[in-house]
Structure formats: C-alpha cells, structure tokens
Amino acid sequence: MKPIKTVNIVGMGALGLLYGALIAEGAGTDCVTYVMDEDRYARHKNDRYTANGKPVHFSIVKAEDAKPCDLLIVAVKYPALESALDTMTTSVGEDTLIISVMNGISSEEILGARYGMDRIIHAVALGMDAMHFGTELIYSKAGQLCLGVVDPTMAEKLNALTAFLDGTSVTYTVEEDIIRRMWSKFMINVGINQTCMVYGTTYEGATVPGSVEYMTLIAAMREVILIANTEGIRLTEEDLMQSLGILHSLAPDATPSMGQDRINKRPSEVELFAGTMIHFGQKHGIPLPANEFLYRRVREIEASY
Image 1 (tube, one colour):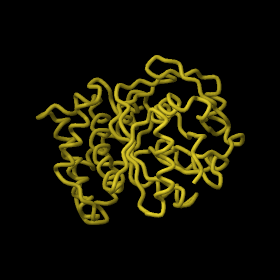
Image 2 (tube, one colour):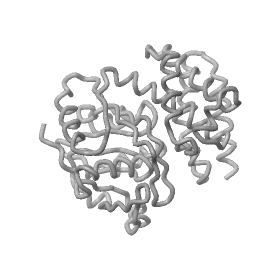
Image 3 (cartoon, one colour):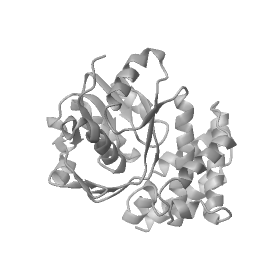
Image 4 (tube, helix red, strand yellow):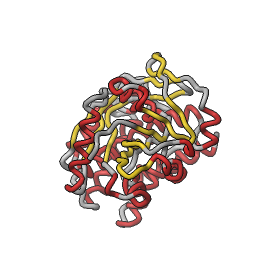
C-alpha cells in the first residue's frame, strides 16, 4: 500500500471543513482538494473560509476536473449521498481509500456497493461540536476519528491511513469492534440531534436532568439500545452514560447539525435517525414511541419553513 499524500473531500459542511482544516494543519493545504458538482462549484468557487476566525484556503474543483486521490473523505448529509456517489467518480483511482464521516450506520455499505468494500475503511467522527454558518467554521472540540476494519485483510490499508493521520492534527483511535462504535455514535445522534431540533435547544439545554428535553433524549437513546440488542449489537446502559459524558464535554451553547438545520431552515437527516429506527421497529414488531414522536415533530417543523 503506497503512502497517502493527496486528499479529496466531498462535502464542505461542518465536518468537511473541520477535517480539511485539521489535515491541512499538519500536511499542508496543498494536499487537500474539495470536489463539487458544477452547480455547487459555481456557488462556492470564490468563497473564502475561516476556521475559528482563522482564514483557511483550499483548492475547490469541479468533479469533471478532479484527479484520483489517495484518500477520499465523504462528508455530505445523508440526502446528498446519492448525488455524491456521482461527484466522487473522477476522484477514485486504483488505490484510493474511502472513509465516510457521515452520520448513521449505512453509508459504508452504500459507498462499498458502488466502489468496492476493499477500499472502505469504516470510520466514526465522535465528540466534536463543529458548527458551520456560511463560510465560517466554529468549534471548541475537534473530537476524534474512530477507525476500524471488518475484514482483517484490510489491516495494511488501515495502517497506511493511520500513518498519514499521524502527520496531521486529526486525533484518531483504532477500534477493535468498529460496528459497535458506529451504533454507539448512532445512539448519540438519534438522541441529541433530534431533541435539539424539536425543542430548538443546545447541548446544555438537552442535558438538564428532569427536563422534558432530557427525558426525550434518554428515551430515544434507550430505544436505540433496544434495537441494537435485537440486531445482535452489544449496546448497554453504560454506553448511554458514556455518551452523556461526551455531550457534557461539548460547548454548552452549541447545537448539533439538526439544530443548525432548524436555525437555517434546511431539510434534516430525520430519515437517517428516526426513520431508520422506525424501520427497525417495524422489522421486529417493536414500538418506538420516542422516535415516532421525534419523527412526527421534525416533519412538522420542516413543513413550517
């Protein structure tokens, strides 16, 4: 496996900008390129971005002009994944590795179905509080990237990825059970993202014990534990408490992506969270009242834009 030297990123939201900035801090901005479809390129080619008030300058290219890269990071919202699969095409070469920092538990399989699971390193972005407004990225916690493989033959490729990240400002861990870690992050997102959007609140507002926001958060997360266990994934109440610890460590006045969606009147990832949960509930004949409530309220909020 050859060393990683070039990185293309599809998606220039909070996580896309965060990882571009963290990689550039160590490896330089020359190695990072953002790839966009023609319409997005026309809108953003002259934008100037900042990360915590500091200017960051990246190459932005149309997909048709992109070159194959060593590492491709997919950082789009779930509704944009289908179009991103086409945007990525010119960035994928013979030796390109792909990681997804998207929410949810299904993007790796979707990417692998298109480009081959032999180039997918499973990844979970955990513990950051990045917010993206216009061309401004704000964060107090960069979090960590949890990495792992489900196929032992991918170990050499994982080693190439970690060797590259060692030369950047990306903090990472290598997980023995990456699928369990993905479900743990899914549990956090199902709870905090949807709760913050429905109640128009922040990390702090959603984690006040005894509040309706807190009770909704906990109920939604416990439903994920129930579904995960039914699917053979070992999530526990201890995982829930650890997740609360992560939430308490984030900027109290910040809000996650769905909270930002409500502020900016954008479509959310409710299908990825409550929608996925409701699908599993129907599959197993398990009622999920918290997620059914959150799904209904998010759709009502979106319809009011």
